[in-house]
Image 1 (cartoon, rainbow, N blue to C red):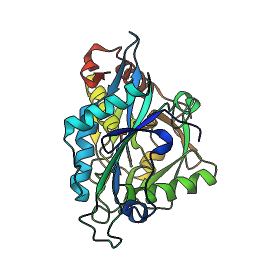
Image 2 (spheres, protein in one colour):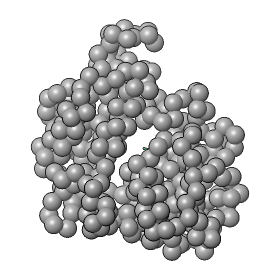
Image 3 (cartoon, rainbow, N blue to C red):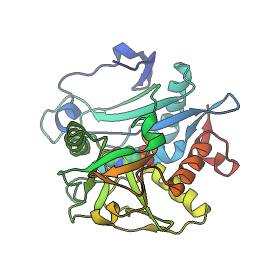
Length: 305
Ligand SMILES: *Cc1c(COP(=O)(O)O)cnc(C)c1O
């Protein structure tokens, strides 16, 4: 394994990384009955570290439990403190944090209302998900042959584990074809999102992103929308088509893992001149300033360790 830290929070206790194990008959392992979050903690200029938008991630974690029908057996405050503890205990200055709740073993049938809900929180150092080079110069994306979830097939507003088979299929498909990331269309053929990121396009200074209907409500998406509105760009949350994406002046992905990653090519077509455009760079720079605590306006998004 390329990453590792010392401890993992598991069901209320700090256990050694190597010992955070589950039984093979864990319900979630068979049926995907789990849900998770992806959070980042950044090292700030002043030597402190801060978690980015912790309250919003906590809200979504609990929302996922509510949607799946297996609520967390803890309070928000308990999970929040455990999240901060796992960073401290591992002595991490900058890291990715992965809370996971999952249905444990017991009943093996699909209906298992009495199986225990386990909760784990891990943290480890994790650099740019789509690469440093991608953040700087943009990545190459491809529209996947796999359609994004219909709103009544999967619950798109939750980070439910089972939902990610769709993402894995799409990601593997395009990676094996030589691209960096998969873009998926919704069941009506409009652009939805990427395998683990939301998508933005810019045309004539207008910033557009998919509405929340069939996508994961990204916290990075929300941060970038807030920044764009603060910078007085015209912002639209509206569906758009694949050809509108091809003819955009600029495009980028947002996500906790991917942060703000420019898209330089879609389906072998250059987006704009084929390098990150001015609006993307401005929003990206402001986002990086915000996560690093360099912009007073967005300090409210930081929870200090
Ligand atoms: C997590 C995720 C995102 C990005 O959400 P953030 O809150 O910005 O990390 C977008 N799409 C999908 C499918 C995701 O799983």
